[in-house]
Image (cartoon, rainbow, N blue to C red; front, side, top):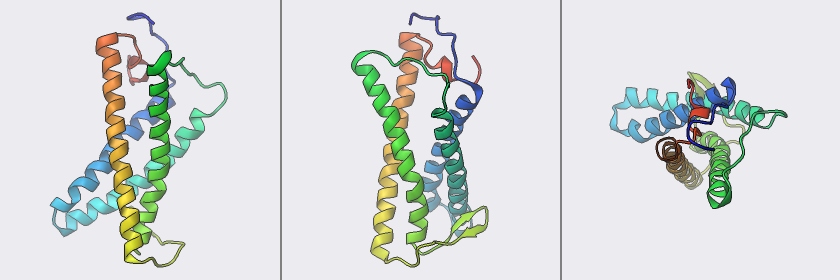
Length: 179
């Protein structure tokens, strides 16, 4: 596609779900990385917010998967060659990591033997109590997966900016809320 010829765009719901997912991933990561720098009442609010927004992310991700796999959705041909396969691979890996991270978030709280909280509504573990080493192990996997998502999402964003500013091929414009 040559510069300036990409006028086709994703539908509004696809764009909204993409940016909602991106915003929630950044918010979730920031909350988890910074809550230890705050005193107890603020830290507790940040933890509860993290869980609550995690449940919202769960719903958005489920809707996104449903919307993405529906028949007749707008899709654009992948870039040919190695770059196209790499882009598709990163997209699939991001979806896979998000699909792993969401239940890990639930299990992180439950394996610490605490209920999940959705803006104060407590959701107890359906599994009973866990040992401290199990809780620590699940928490480590949750952290590693979170960092992996953030690094890949950052590379994804850099690739979009490369397409926009260097290749000038309209790839980023297809996903922007306004053209």
